[in-house]
Image (cartoon, rainbow, N blue to C red):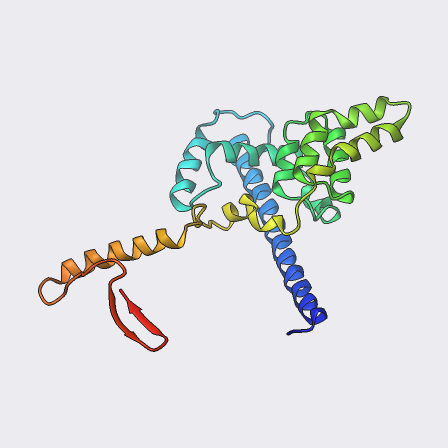
Amino acid sequence: MLPMQFVDDVKQIVDHGLREAYDKVNSVAVHTYWLIGKRIVEEEQHGERRAEYGSKLITLLAEELSMAFAKGFSARDLRNYRQFYLCFSDLEIWYTRVPNLKWSHYRTLLAVTSEDARYWYVHEASIQSWSVRTLARNVGSQYYQRLLQAPNKDAVVNEMLQLTKPLKDEPQGFLKDPVVAEFLQLPSNSSFTETELEKAIIRHLKDFLLEMGRGFAFMAEQYHIAQMPGISLWI
């Protein structure tokens, strides 16, 4: 039996590596979406906040990108990236101060109209390691505005902490983050059972043998062809 301390040490190494990789992917994704938004603003709006010729450019760009890449570049996505740049046009200056926020955090804040509130939420979400669900709840409950107006700010903070306890990220929940899979262009339907895999293999094997013609035969699924001590062969 392996020493538990040894096993725990290796688990921590793996967990640290996975988290570091996840953080880097998120960081690159955020910067990539910001750059896309910046380029759209430059092309469509010539640096101004109002577009001169509507959303036609975004629609056409979405069609081109969707043919080249699997996901993440619909017209709606591109509008979010544009809005992201307009809301955080100075991202490159201060982003190193909040490196632990994901694209989902920023996307949640696109609906916040107050610039002061947006930057306050970014700062708090970063230093307090809010999950995306915690941030979304605080934005929806106008936590920033209530704190400004509350005579007893501690009561508001304590209530928020109590109500958002169940919304914390699960350990290694980052492995299931759909944003990472989308950014890396990984297939979203990669989960299948052993039975489904077996059926897919047999289906293609059967078609292949039929194409080969005479001299080959498909007997049956899981056909028992031999047995020796400790070994059974099936096809």
